[in-house]
Amino acid sequence: MTYALLTALLAFCIVSTVTPGPNNMMLMASGANFGYRRTVPHMLGISIGVAVLVLGVGAGLMALFDLWPLSYTLLKVAAVLYMLWLAWKIAHAAAPDGASAGGKPLTFLQGAGFQWVNPKAWSMALTAITVYAPDRTLASVALVGAAFALVSVPLISLWVVAGQQLKRWLTSPARLRGFNWTMALLLVASLYPVLLTGTE
Image (cartoon, rainbow, N blue to C red):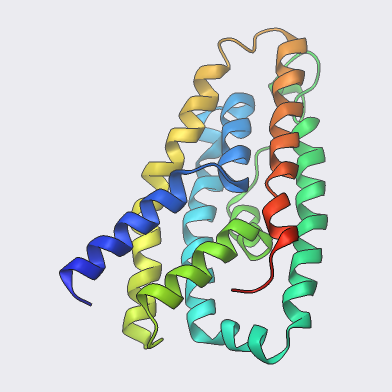
């Protein structure tokens, strides 16, 4: 991979990782409800999960979608159902008397596993492999996965910190409840583009 292509890959990873999406909405809600330290396993799960998803896509999942288009439809259905469930969990993340009284942040495995039903993560992985590793060699696919892992934690941390800072404003149960419901609705809204598109 040339220096110019590597620079372009890193830029793609940075932009696609830091922009709003299901992971970042959930991390912001987690930061507000549980704080930075308790959200670290979730962040690490996202970072590793996206890298593993990229490796899986590069190893042949794109070919599966081409060969059996129904598999992509089934993936979208699973994604929608799981994200609706997660939105419900976010909406009810904190008890009326505070976050410490109810709810738990996602674990490492839950954060990693979510990437397999995260429409934005699939879009990122499919685009990255198509554009930056079209030969799908082990080295090029691994480089794309490593690029996502490299930029992921520092960038998604910004969303957790933003949520943590919002916690100062979310001192009343009504505000916290309103914030959680807003994050839940934004998570559901992030499904809209996926429901309109097919495989790319």
